[in-house]
Length: 377
Image (cartoon, rainbow, N blue to C red; front, top):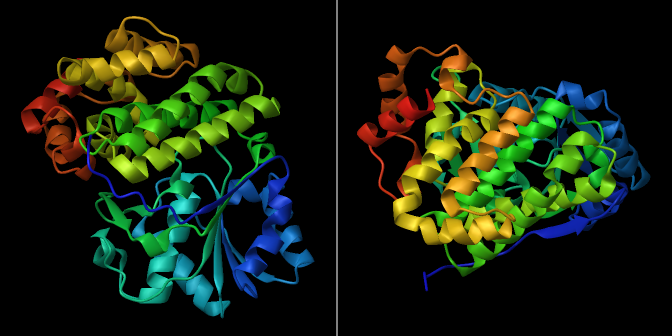
């Protein structure tokens, strides 16, 4: 069996209207004034109001930073830090939203407590001082960022993504409330759901896979594959929403314990240069990566396919991802994303520098990644 070091530190609260417990949970962490990190769109849905109401009931003051956009950058993190300093003293950070808000909240925690810039924390374990307690509340069934100790932050100028991790950056408490998913637009629900499925599949076969990570991956894929269509069709279906939310969280736990692979390495340059959403970019590349990896880990793909109720192992998994894309009218070829074939070598060069590719079960370099892009083109 693969060696592993499993170190859980996060309390997880799951249930309908669980956000109503936010004030009590924050108070247990010693909170007096909270920084709530979210995005402008979410503020219009009522979710922010629910969070503030819960905090107010426990007499916890709050400041709301709404400066998060998709794929948060170093500039957004720095703006959040300045906002926190102007509205402090802050003693707890709450991330409310999709993966971007959760990552930005973690990024703000790094700089607010340890100073410097995000580049100083690129890698793992570089924060020397204690960090503030934090609570993560996902409002999409996607990234699973609430389960991870890494903040994925893009450089402001190049949009190169940096994975900045530290066990102190983990959310001390996570609230999984399926009611918060009811306002997710269909297209967002689709791409975030596919992102979560990709996390389950890539983490299951990664070079760092182990008994714990594969347990999380497998259960995540079961929940996600069985409830994806029901949730996409009706976001008011709380049973399906809850299972998608839990599935995405378990997939996030799998990433925390095993990392990812070549599909994510290929996706990051696409989101940086062509305004593709992360989930769409990963899902477009994933079928080609699955087929590429099949000669190395096809037995694992057989196991995943059976879990998802599919036949044909790797080919069945790859075909299902493409099928989901087509059902939701998402592009399945790079040529349909305003990308020219002449740009593929540059994308391959950047993908070869991505950290996640190093954990792919079949080694990938610039040559292999270029071929994957060509197959996807």
